[in-house]
Length: 397
Image 1 (tube, one colour):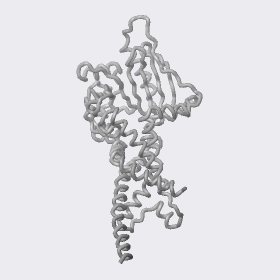
Image 2 (cartoon, one colour):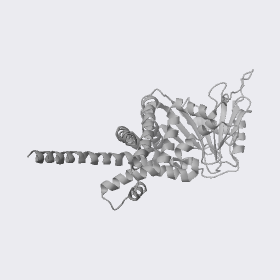
Image 3 (tube, helix red, strand yellow):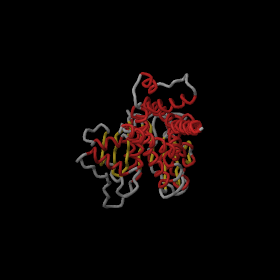
Image 4 (cartoon, rainbow, N blue to C red):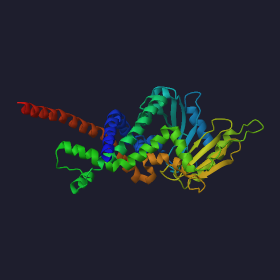
């Protein structure tokens, strides 16, 4: 029974690996490039992220937003701003519109602009057409293979599911049928003194084992994003009988509302005040009449360590406030909030990101080393057949 299960695991590992190998290489390689995206961007484009000179006071957020909007192509509206507690950093205003029915990357992003602004002087330091940004293209290749939301996301979603099966089947194959001292050594160490075929096998077998836990976490978090039903099921199961809260809404005023500019300043002042002892913040502008200003103030490089605010767009009042460490947050919701950090490794800080980067490099190598193992075994089979035929010929003669 155990032998049969092992054979099934081997066949799954082999054929699923052969069919999804190229996609796994692409997703793993692009993931490695994105691992330290923010740090690389700041090195490559310092003029975008840092001001020439810091000042005593920053301009009102409504004034900065108006200037950023004026810098955009005509008719486009600012939809988000990113702030930093670092006094030397620019404010980043963003506008984005996507078509999820498009079949290519270029069709998916109808427009995507970022405006980098000096918050002390209001000077626009750069207007970036983010649709042409190298890292944005790499991100879409990672998520959708540049094939749009419907096709590309479906392919990467099922490729991730297949990859998870490959990892589990690989663990079954990795564990030897008979345990011995030499077998035990071969499970955890690469025999560098052996020939290249054995080294290739060990690289696949040993490194695959060491990377399996972070790779399974990466696969799980990707499945949560790719399959809405899985996301809902996990959240519902872990939340138990606890009902989820209703979406925060603004109260529509009885009279005509004309104080939108002041509301942005009220919201901005409160967010900046909360930002003083934290790392960064973002403010999403309301999209509908009942929408709110949604603000997320993050403590450090771990995205889940944040405080979330919903401000009424007509009064500036806080209609909802949630801290990541609140005890009343259900387990399923708390796990979902950590999904990004679970996917990138930042849940363990810089150490986790480095571990995930190494795991990503190993993941990119696994289909290649696995394919080489397959080719080597395939070449051996005809030789065995020839020897067998010679033996039969000898018996007949």
